[in-house]
Image 1 (cartoon, rainbow, N blue to C red):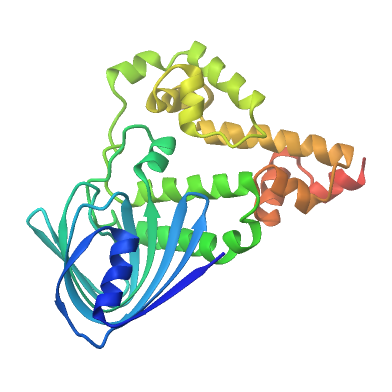
Image 2 (image 1 turned 180 degrees about the horizontal axis):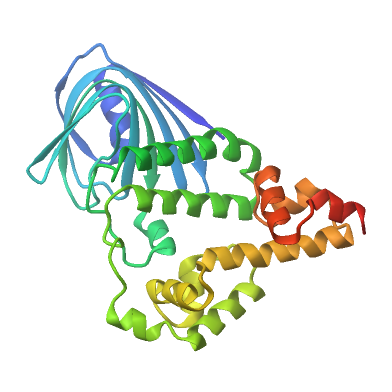
Length: 302
C-alpha cells in the first residue's frame, strides 16, 4: 500500500524529511515550501517518491540506512567528509554512507529514493560496505534505475503478497545496487575464502538449497548452512559447478515447478509465482531453456 504525506511550509517539510531520513537541523530556506512524499514498501526495501517546490539547507546526523536515489528534476548538493557532490536531473546517487553526517541543499527536488538497511545488504554479500556515492558507469546506473522502476511499478503492486517473489525481487535489487555503486565487495576472495571453497562446503550448501527451495532463503542462510563465508561459498559454486548459488537455487525451483506442471498442480502463472517468478514470460524462457518445451506444453501433456 502506498502512503502519501504532503507538507506545507518549511518547518513541516523539514519534519517530514527528518522522519524519513534521520534527524536534521534546518539552516534556512524558502518559507513558502511544499513537499509531497509517496512511500511504498517491498518487503524490507522502501521506495519514496519525493516532489517539492522548496528550497532549503539542512545539517543531518548520520543516516541509519543507505539512501540511494535518482534525481528526475531540480538540484541537490551533498557535502560530507570534505567532499561536495552537486546532483542534477538524471543523476543516480548514494546520499552518504551510514556513519557520515552531511549538509544538504535542495532546490525543487524531484527524486525517486530507495532505502536499504545494512542488514539486508549483509544477506546478499557478507561484510560489504558501500564506499562511493557515484555509480561505476552510466550503463550500470541505467540498469539500476530500470530495476527500481520494474519493482516499484510492476512487481510490487501485483505480487506484494507473494513471499518468494518479494524475496527474489529484493535480492535482485540489492545485487544490482552492489554491482552499480562502489563497495568493499568488489575485491578478490581472500586466502581463507579460497581454502574454504571445498567440495564438502559445496555439498552442504547444495543439500540446504534442495531441502529449503520452497522457503525464502538468502545467500547468508546458504553460507551459514555450508559453515563458510558468503564469499567462500560463492567461490565454491563457481569453482566446482561454474554457477552462482542463486543460479543453483533457481534451477532447483525450476525443477520443482516442472514437477508441479507434470502433476497439474495449478496454472502456469500460479506455479511460476509459487516458485518465485513474478513474470510468466521469464519463467517460460527459463523453462524452455531447461526442458526444451513451454510450461503450457508440459501442463497439457500430463
